[in-house]
Image (cartoon, rainbow, N blue to C red; front, side, top):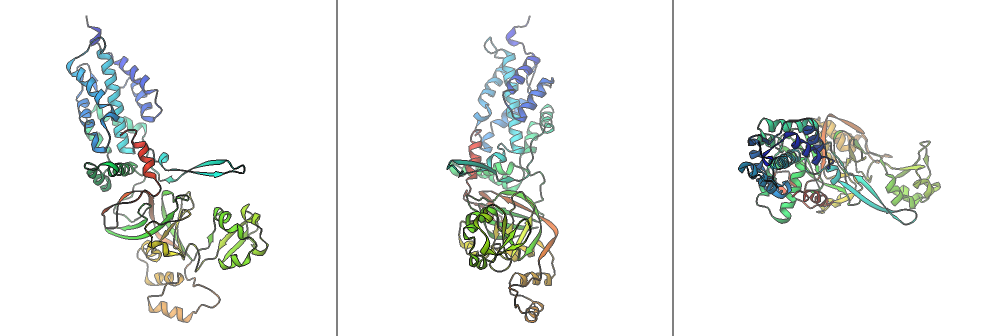
Length: 478
């Protein structure tokens, strides 16, 4: 007759795991509960004790500090203690085999899914880390908070198929291969992981945060050898890549109160000498108080347009209320002095932001360039247009130069200027809208450790305090 302390009942183990998982809401616990409830095979133990898979996972968990996490975060001490009892058949009335094996099966499955899921999709949800809260007083003087999500990069999330594939890897005794397969492979992640080994204090924290960003794999990856534009906010830099070449330039981004959102899209066209439709927030803050002052509107080349009819309205007869309640919109004429400069680069996004030139380039000399209401101002707009057009002919580029007020570089361009002197017009308009031959992917990202134009890793300030937000989540598991 078997002693009860040595009895291991698979159904009891499954029941224990299902009940343990139901106290959590995440998708991986729901999958675990469903797997064991549907009589899924035990992964780590059998009637003979520990399966080889358990030893493989335990060995990997002992190396968890390679990712910056502590053994305690994955209950390694508890797992090791239970595993030793199983190896030594060290069971008694207080520690019966069924209870120990159930605890071990649960903890190993939990640690395994947490690790492979975190490595593949991230340990932190980016849509929780990149939320910006502002507070404004309402009509009664009470401060009201507003939450804005500033992350619109389409990242992947784990599915039931992913979890099942991960468990299939365990059943096939491929624990190590499954973990390696899900770890990021890009060069930045690998270099950060290498540096983590000797890092301490704030440097270690910063490296871990940027490793986490590398885990947020995009739903549609772009080849690192393809044409792409990357704007890294903390670096205040834009990088336009083409094969092994990189065009880099300084940028200005949103202030801490009007932050530039993180997103991905495709640049499809640009406009030369664009009209600037002034956002309502700027109208309310800066423009409305000048209602009725025609000299102010003339000086800034602002036009007032009635929304309902599209008719232009004389600035002398516009009231502050007409501007603040949205009856009228305000636009600045394109050309010299326009707030967007002489060219704007358009791409679809949910925030109405874009890349553009500036009529006030002096800020590019500053180290910190948080100057805009959310859009990105670029230092080399003509060179960027030239990059986007790939192999444009010289006359196309010359027409863009002339329209932007840049001195022509060809005899044909100089002849055009001589034959067509500006009279009433304030600017040449040889080019208005130009569509790109091929859309160019653009990524507005936020890395406080990132390669510069020469490929050397640089450390940048956490200008929007997003490192802190991510670290607050990571430290709960580190």
